[in-house]
Image (cartoon, rainbow, N blue to C red; front, top):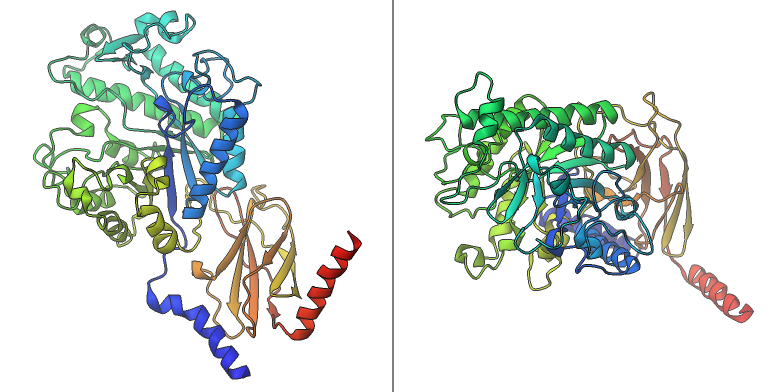
Length: 530
């Protein structure tokens, strides 16, 4: 009987390993949470703050169940704020009226960061740097008198339905840099994030009216396209330097349009033939920013199907992997296109899993970001189930950025394990600060069979990640008759992992009628007392 129990123990542990490959231990698994036009959060304007908080917390819980370990939340959709600011007005998407604060008052950004960190998720603050008014025709009567477009009208250009900052004006670049610096200095965000909106996407037959600015600020340049790219370069470099000056460990990332340049226009470009590119039309030279180290990560929006001939997914993936210059590369995934009625290619529900599998064939690709939140929580789609039960079945730590911090924390000490009915209770002591002053931000608990080789690179051996206050963990999933070894590591805010705890503890969690009767009597006596 004992041999049979041991067989079941080993079968339970190793069955999954034989059935499918183990996912990477380090991988960014993120989702965009859009606030503009109440796309993802909050679901409508002017909800009571308690409702807003409940919505956001439940949203994070859903993503946590899927396996998400980072959220990219839009905190400045249109020169407005989802946080307390002396510089810009409260967002209408939050309170229903631009400039009106939440009542009763709370700071949404502070709350969202705390909720994300509580669940072990990185919080990336997503800013739209240049968009000033989203759809002026619909909001003509809703723009506050103190809005920056009214205070500094000379800084803005109307283009189509939207109003944009003029990137050529030095004071504009300084203003935007100061906005970012204010948030970085006051909030414990993990990253600053920009999307693909720099100069606006071209509208057929309408020119972006910056000819006068070109004449004023062009210097020795004669090509207006080069000049525009130069304006954006100045902003990106300025913000990069400012973040490093204030908090060097805060990351800076950009999510550009999926195509830098076509090879027909530049031998360094991708094998694509699209009509729009980031370089020519949005004046965003993302390849230069990566090469110069101005940004820490890039999330190209590779929102194309394998069979989309002008820009097939495999070709673009290969190009970005070859042009990331050692910075982190995460792929923007078009979860919103799955099952599309208009783009029939996406009616193949195997496309997204195929893209994720292909991603993992490239060592340069260190994760994915899904657009957008509601696409993952939509029960009619299958992608969330695929993530939860397959791709993200085991937990993953966020990839390391050695250029920002490569010093791991000290290891936890004095690991102790006690046995109770079908569970194990672990405690340990918090490690001392590392040489750079960093403390442990969270702990990773590993469990191995007694005779199994220790391999901390295998995420299947992670039984828990402890992020809340307190150095303890309860393993409620032990198997009868198994003998285990537990190890605990400490991880800092930039996800450097310590060596394992010195104490290696062997535990034999075996249930018996004696254990059962003891637990039964404990429960019975508690009921009698109450």
